Length: 167
Image 1 (cartoon, helix red, strand yellow):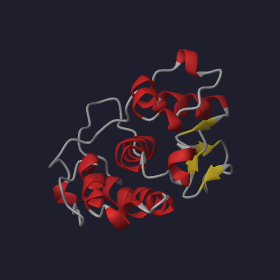
Image 2 (cartoon, helix red, strand yellow; image 1 turned 180 degrees about the horizontal axis):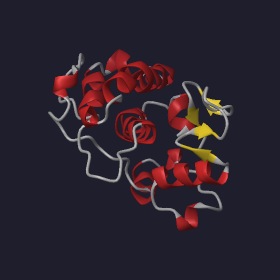
Image 3 (cartoon, helix red, strand yellow; image 1 turned 135 degrees about the vertical axis):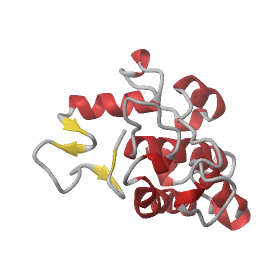
């Protein structure tokens, strides 16, 4: 995720930003509860979190790509919203939620075959098959819950820009 957030070169921009980063950030920040949630609007804070937290991170990462993703591929903005479940739009509204599928992040095997430059396996990767599982395990082992350190109501201390845990 750190590599995608830092921006990647033209060969992997679409996958890194639109497919991987969009799905990971949305599910890491808005984890669906135990019941089946298929739309961001099903989560009380969902739309505001998307507009105020997730989209700025995605668009900043897209700008850091070489060349910036949306400069020569402006349609990718609509694809970002499509992967969040808002359909093909560049100006989503809460009522647009559910017009397309809200995508989950690809599993580690798919990432390593589709974009090996984004994958740097470590000692935990042998037992983990999805980047979300990796993220949640790191949070748990570091004594954090729901992305917030114990005793810290203001957010994470060691984070990437925008409050995303380094994973």
